[in-house]
Every structure is written in C-alpha cells, then in structure tokens.
Image (cartoon, rainbow, N blue to C red; front, side, top):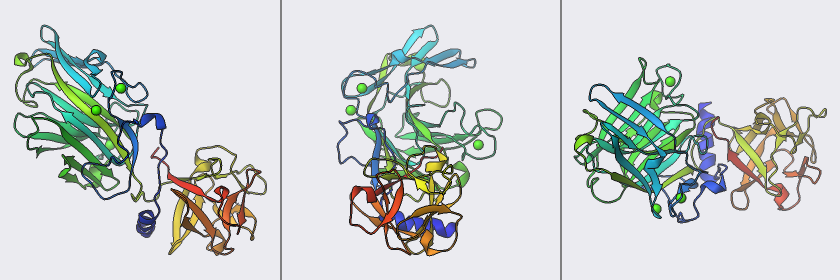
Length: 412
Ligand SMILES: [Ca+2]
Ligand SMILES: [Ca+2]
Ligand SMILES: [Ca+2]
C-alpha cells in the first residue's frame, strides 16, 4: 500500500484532482488569485471564503450559537457566547466583548458546523486582534458533528481534535497554538506551544493552518511557526472553522477582564479555506464525473449484465480507488462492490472481479481544464458516456462525453 501512495503522489503532481465546492460558500469578493499567505507548495483550490463585505452574517456559511461557557468558581465570573456579539461592519466580522452585569460577560462566536466542513487543506484568517486583558481573539477548528474533540478516548487525535490556530492570550509578541483530543475530561490530551509573533498587537496579521494527512503547520504572516508530525496529533476527519472571542480570568490570558475597557472588539478581515489539488490522499476514494452532463460513473450491481452505468445513485457505488498497478496504469476499484472497471472488448465496458489483465488497466490523460481521459491499456480506446446513460469504449476523437473530472471524496 505504501508504494501505491508514493505512486499516487506522482500522479497528483501532474494531474490536479479537485474537490467538489458549494459555490454559495465562495465569496465573489475574494481575489481570483488568492492563495495561502504562507505560499506552501501545492495547487490550491479555494473552497470556502468570506470577505465580510456587507453588514449581514451569511447564514449559508456561519451559525451563531449561544454557548454558556459557565461560571468560574475560582474567580467568581461567568461568560457566554451570544449572537449579539457578532456583527459585520461592511469590511470585517466584528467580535465584541461586553459586560452584561455584575461579574457577567459575553463575547461572540461564529462557526460553520453543519454548513462547511473539510479535512486537510489550508485554513486562513486575517485578524486585528482585540486588546489582551482577560480576553482574547481566537481562530480554531472542531471535528465534524461533535462538540467534544476526538470522541473516542484512544490516545489519538485521529478521530478529531480541537485545533487552535490562534489564541492571542499574551501581552507579549506571542500567541498560543494547541491540539486538544480525547474529550476535555479525564482522558484529555493536548499539545500546546506559544509561538513568537512580532507586532501581533498592532494592525492586521494572517494566521494559517496547513493541514495534510501527515503534518500540521502553523503560519503567522506567512511565516512557518510550528510543525506537528506526530501521527497521534493529526486529525483525519472533517472539521469546521470557528471565529470567536474568549474571556478568561487566571493564568491562561494575561490581565483581567474586570479592568479591561469594554466594550472591546476583535476584527476579522476574511476567512478563506483552500483544498490542495496535489495532496497525496493515500487510499482515499474519488468520484469520476462526466463533462457532458455531470453524471457520475457508478457501479450498478442491480444490472444483470454487471455493466457500468452512470444513472444509479448511491454514495459507495459512486466511489472508486485509483490503484496504480504499473507506471501510469491504474485500476478503478469500486468502493461498494470491490470490483474493477474492465473493457470487455474494443467497445463494451463491464465490471468484473479484479485481475491482473491489462483490459482492467487505464491510463489517465490530461484533457481540458481539470478533466481527464481514461484510456484502456489493452484496447487503446477511451471510456465515454453514451446517450443512453451507459458507458462504452471508443477510439473517436475528443468530446465532452469522453472527458471526466476525477474529484477527491471528502473524508466521511
Ligand atoms: Ca456578510
Ligand atoms: Ca481520540
Ligand atoms: Ca474584509
């Protein structure tokens, strides 16, 4: 399997494999040439952005949950997240910090849980942080669907982690990065590091997380500040971004909210998330989507002739592994049936138990844009969709029915 991963990395450097995007979650105000401030190696596809260019919080991107952060018995202070503490001013998302009563404070939180969630890529925000005086600006990730990080106490963040990209907790030129996993109780694990951040208390700064299956890299103004490579600290599931303000008495944040000048604000200029089209996704699954009408290559197991059609829907039936069997030659293995795409002859396509025969092997040729052509090794014809919604092999010249977009399937 290791060799497959290495070979797939070679494939991905020459053929960009995209991820599906919800167009309503990309802000048209984001510059078309936007890319991660850290300029890390990769072929970056914008998949989520908000430039906060109006005065309305976009409900297709953000929810504004009420969160009761509890009563701190040590310091006699309580605080909560309220939607009243999130707004937009035409250029920024504004997170405010206010006092609501004796020893009671509130701040804001916006997160994309249930709206946008992604594994891997580059998560970035540009922030003018709030004054650090018992309160802080934060940008962080949490795992899909959960309120506790890494729900299973297994000594690992693989099943999800709280990934803190920014907690501006010090009056010095530094901030906190952190990984929390296996819940917040007796099994809680974490990996905390303060990182230097020259000038953080003045003006605007970018905070980025480059996340791959094998590393977490934290950037400040495009400068790499921290790298995590220990496998047990790297989440391998989808997570969602969170913009929030925190209020703490005690050692975590310098100063005291009781003496802070309130209300105070932290400003967020944008949040952008990118997919890396060249990332090695190992043995993950792909969808193969036809250019002519966006139908999806599918294994229809109800078809008695065991043929491939593009009409059936079904999550696993639409997923394929691309396994390299020799240089440039790939098998397409269906996730649901475990069987392989095969050219039965110079015209007919079927699905059959996987063998080493070259009629089950395909080369991938770059076509227009992100599209590829799949050429059968034995018969030298191309996979194409027919008007009947079936697939066949053809030696005819380029047409949309012969072009396919191979898109990475997000971690489930
Ligand atoms: Ca808005
Ligand atoms: Ca865990
Ligand atoms: Ca902005």
